Structure formats: C-alpha cells, structure tokens
Image 1 (cartoon, rainbow, N blue to C red):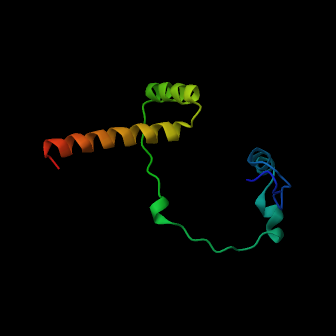
Image 2 (cartoon, helix red, strand yellow):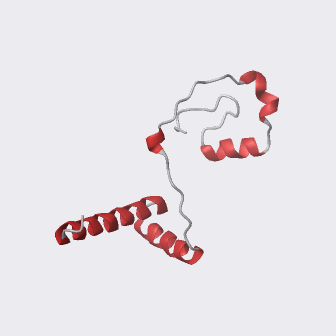
Image 3 (tube, rainbow, N blue to C red):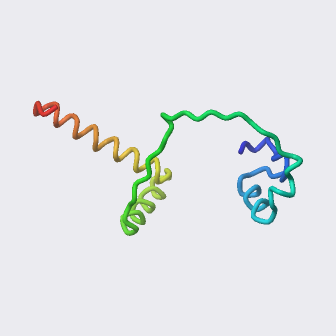
Length: 96
C-alpha cells in the first residue's frame, strides 16, 4: 500500500494498520461499503512453492539479512546462478 493512500474502509495508511484493523473487524459489517471489481490474472506471474528444510532456511535467512535482501531474492539469484552455470557447462561439453 502506498504511503499517500488511505484504505477506504479501515482508514489505514499501512498494510500493518490494515491487518490490525481486519483482525478485529468483520467484512460482513461493511458489506454496504464494498463493490464488485473485475480482475484478470497473468498466468505467467505464477509462483512455485518449494519446501526447504528448516535448518537450511534459517541459514538462508541469516545470509539474506546480512546482505540486506529478501530471502526470495537471494534464493532466486542463487538458483539463477546455478542454472546458468549448469547450462554453460552442458553447452561446453556438448550435452545440450
């Protein structure tokens, strides 16, 4: 949520404020203030979830914090590096 916008129902300025508001309120109480919207989704934006062992995830969190990046960014960068390295080795060896 952008800082210059205010939620129409909760009056929240941040996602944290909005989350706190909805933890304590029911949308059913505000049904008259809602409206239908048309939405489309881009299938190419789909994400895949992968299970990571808890001990490994803890290590990744620590590295991400030290590098001041999100764990998602760090994992995606590392995976891209490994896939590119593998593809290069396969090309050089003629395996592709």
